[in-house]
Image 1 (tube, rainbow, N blue to C red):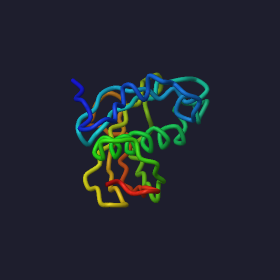
Image 2: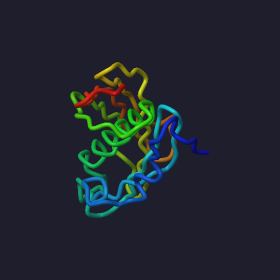
Image 3: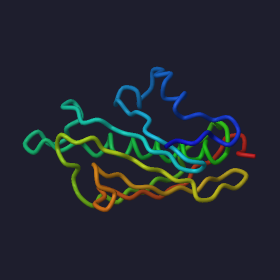
Length: 146
């Protein structure tokens, strides 16, 4: 069940706009959220396959999914859409995504300062206990979060 953002950022509405963006091109969509976390999804598509022999998705779309999930978690925690830049996003791939399955990315903003947001998250394809990847990173607000 999703919860409303604390003071004005609504990720469901944001993803419903479907403006021309990298995420829209990849097919990234909204799933659910809380006050400082968001879950997005990347549906399996043949044009996103990185290894045609195995049918495994390329790593780039999964990284883009996690960048978006963690960015949205920052806006939820801040309570507003804030222009920001990804300073660092480390991704540890634990296994390939299962061909044919949607990848789910969950991002969490666990600390927010005046100008820096600290995030973490994971990607899985149906079982959070068997993750595809873990991420950790930082974002910087171009005009401040508070």
